[in-house]
Image 1 (spheres, rainbow, N blue to C red):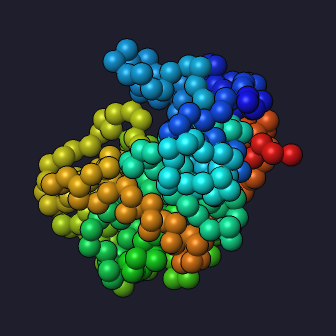
Image 2 (image 1 turned 120 degrees about the vertical axis):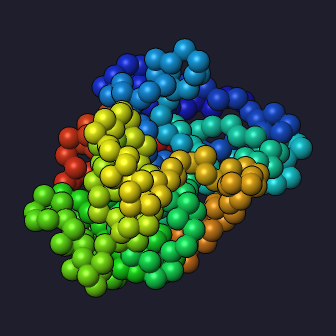
Length: 343
């Protein structure tokens, strides 16, 4: 039996359309899921929306390409399962890398699939962010030692905000959010003990030292995605400190003097892409996705990490085009956007 469904599609830059499609019954190893809510990944999805994503025009890459169905974080309800599926049953509520669509078919037997149960008590808009939160978690994984370390996070967009809360929950202190948008700094300071800095006001180093007992931060997390920000990140970290690149820099950082900015001060510059958390343990990347997702589900279910107040908009999927425009051009109003399809 087919179900009529809807999804968002980007056929070209700065354009979002709504496409209707039919989804069939699950095979023996599949399950059919109705999506409760999905979250926008502002970095990746805006990069595709504006046409600047590096891989759009790379013939060696198959993803992303237009027409593009965006989204990779959501929560849904299992409607029915195939005869061989034993991990889940009809009625289960699960988080997974969902696209912005109303229904989907998932592999119910793949042990590596990022599909995990989540409690009914977690609001749909919050649960929708769980799969996305594994990316700022990569910054903690790559930092490794953080207890009592001063961590400054550059950029208080969605990724930076979640990173601040994760570092705070993990025992970093003090935690500092850096952003030029006053509304975003105010949200950052809702987490107890978090202080913020306006990089456009006075000397950033003076502000950081005033907060961190006279010292520069031990760790600076770059979450803006602006390749030019890496120079400032290296400039404001303590000698011997770590700069963690969690924002995906799209472009070339052309004015970095690696002798003076990095080598001469023995700074560690560390990438924290999602690849840092793999399916299986590796020598350099021992932390795995299954462990990460169990932890994130626990943090959301227990309330140890709050997400609900970061959600600036929770809208019907038909409004996604307006949401992308808002995230791109109205940063004082738009932060974390989630969507739903059911009326």
